[in-house]
Length: 271
Length: 71
Image (spheres, each protein chain N blue to C red):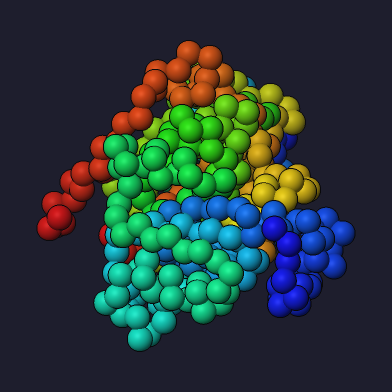
């Protein structure tokens, strides 16, 4: 594949970079990235990856755009209220860059459908909001040996790590299993600074691009934490855990299963 | 003795275990924290027996969801 004249101009600020060049841009145009969750993290990631000319972007989300999303989910705009998030995201990606092929998955991923979807992509971005989904993505990417970026945000804090499954520290190396019910507040209960999602989601997109181009050092074997109030970034080194139930020496997880949805046991809760 | 907890110099009593440090540093919900000492992640069952030493680097790592929060 060679770049057209229009593409030479569109991507000129990439092409001028020694680490990217025309060859790098062609690589990006031939790459496939899957974004799971078109929310706070997935929105900025999708926007930047579209602008960067990632050839194929898959977007997975089973929700519709809600008014309370618009404070941070910048791929969705006011006229999109009530629309399927994947369709709202698709139209923005196409408007940003017609070079990108968009594939939409209006669904929730489960143990019985995730592997065949992620298999077709070069890199996965976890932009989900809940722990069963985060563990499912981690495990599925391990079984498919698919590199991915994990991230989480809450209030003014965010964190992310890139995982090359079987080679570098995974999410289960750090956390083992989902937390007990009601221990960890969600963003809807505890709040989140909208722009924080933009910072962390953009970092996830950066990792995807670096991985696809094979440049720089990936954020593997270390968790990057960020606090928006103190403006402190910290890179916490994390070695692989020999006791990891998934990628440790004696794995206890040998096939993909859904983690149980955390059952709400708050008395006042109507769920 | 001095430790580094989440990047901050912290002075604690000698002989403190990881469990005691969690209490001492007012970690409100220890169930949502994963503890790493000098780059190694500890098992929860090791918190009571792991005695901290001068200059240990301790990290409390928190569960964070986030992203798409419409559930």
